[in-house]
Image: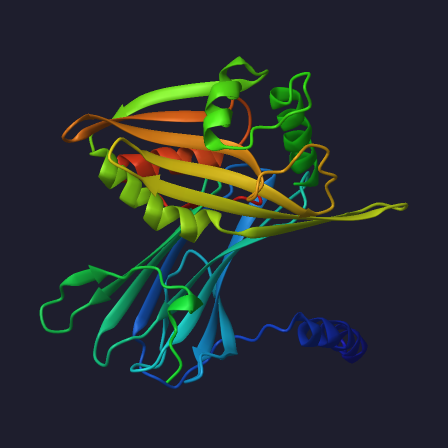
Length: 157
Length: 170
């Protein structure tokens, strides 16, 4: 790619990236959340993309967008703060040749405990989506499935 | 999606209003009027769970999956349309059965010709009726076309499967 092409590409992609409003989630924390995903639109004419938006939850229950993790066939390991709540928004975007792009989401509050691991299994198949999050006890590796908790469950401190 | 909503609205009108210009205003009216309606379907099957367990599954999953507001926009060279539909699930459990009512309230972009019940037009009613200690009959009052994912999800919930939520935008 010559310099002119690179410049043109940068000029084109710059605003697109800037305007999308999405940023890749990055954290210096130890990884405590593993996410595996499986998506199938059920049609050769459409596809489904999955991602999770991570929001930190403030003591007054307001939220701040921290970033997005694109989900694909590879499992993703990320670190989210222990001892405080985060709000996870799993987004499923479906697009196709003969249909409009649609988006649906599964939202839940999570408050990881120190030392515990969390495993999220995300799926979208035949127009049904599912997110199952298990908490793994570090002592005995026992798993406990977490209930879905919406923002209504947040109590200001 | 827009087409689906228009088809559903038109179909609901054709299905249920009859000649008197009436839409069911209660779940009981829906149960009574749907069997004789065009494209109306009553589906029955059994599950190996008590009706209260089925009701608890409905109580867990319906608010999580069906209490949503869906906004659909469509644009052509000459028009721009926005349709906003609020889905309203209700779950009731008494000593005779568990019920799931699903209603759709068109908040924007759809002209409601007939009287609209408080939470919107009824689109589906599901009953879990006790057969034995650990078995129930599920009766779905629904349209015979469309809503495949919704029907599959509700059947899964009734059976106690961890099946997830239907994509109501699909």
